Length: 90
Image (cartoon, rainbow, N blue to C red; front, side, top):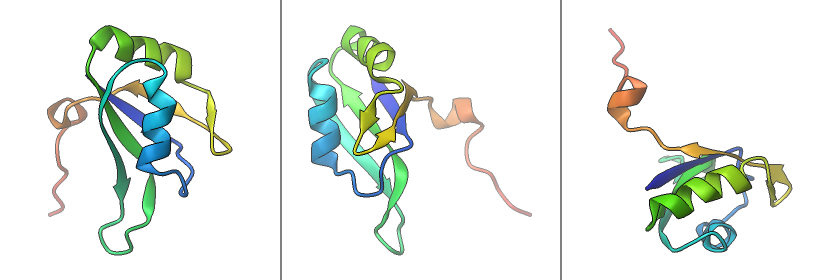
């Protein structure tokens, strides 16, 4: 199950985020989204956890907790289709 993590400190690393979530269960993949041009963190990312129950526990227990000086916003990631997909400018 994929979890959205928002309000990340721009200095937070994938490794730090992995460690933060691994206390709640097996982390399969961590991806902090970066700006394509600068390589700088965009302040959010995704954590994929092996077990849906552990992911739901992580959301419930870690949402609002602090990592690297920032209170995180954590919830279930939505698929692009559910968010409305890409927006096209005309």
